[in-house]
Image (cartoon, rainbow, N blue to C red; front, side):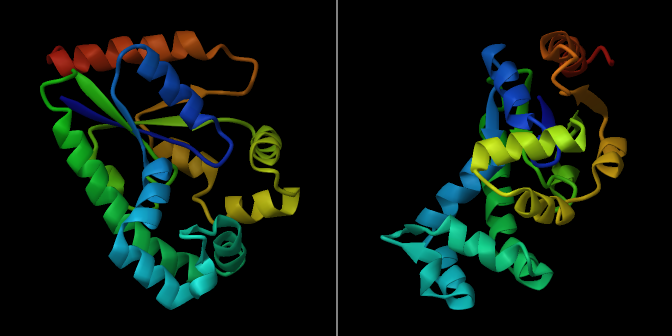
Length: 201
C-alpha cells in the first residue's frame, strides 16, 4: 500500500481535495481533526496543555481554541511548545491509522498542514501539495474561521513558505478557483493506483 500525504498552507483547500479522494473510495485521515480530538481526550496531553498554558485553555471540559490561538500564534516559542506536545501524539495516531489501512486499499491518504514542518513526511511514500494564491487563501480562511486578515497572516507566517512547500511535494494540485479540481485528482488517482500496483508512475 502506498502511503500518501496531502498538504498545503492554511486556506489552500487541502481538505476539499482530500474529500474528492474519499468520494473515489480512498481512505483519508485528517490530522487537524485528530489533533482536536486528542487535545480533548488524551488525559496526559490535557494536563500538559493546562500546565503550560493555564486552566483557561479548557472551558467546560473542552479545548478553548480561541484562547489557545491568542496565546500561541503571536508567540513563536509558545507555538513551538504546543507543537512539541501535540505533534508526536498526532503523528503516532496517524501511523497507527495508516497501518490499519493495509490490505484495505491500494493507497491511503493522510491530510495534514504541517507534514514537512513536523517531519512526518518521512513516514510517507508520496506527497501531494495543494496550491492556491495567497489572497484567495486569506479570503477562504477569513470566511471559514471568522478571522481578521492580520490573524490569518499571523498563522501563515508560522507555516513553511508556500512556494518552498510545493517544491518539496511529489505532485501539486492547483486550487485557484479557476482550474478544475476533479481532472487533477483523477489523474493523480490513476498515477497512485498504478504506483501501488507496482507498475511505476
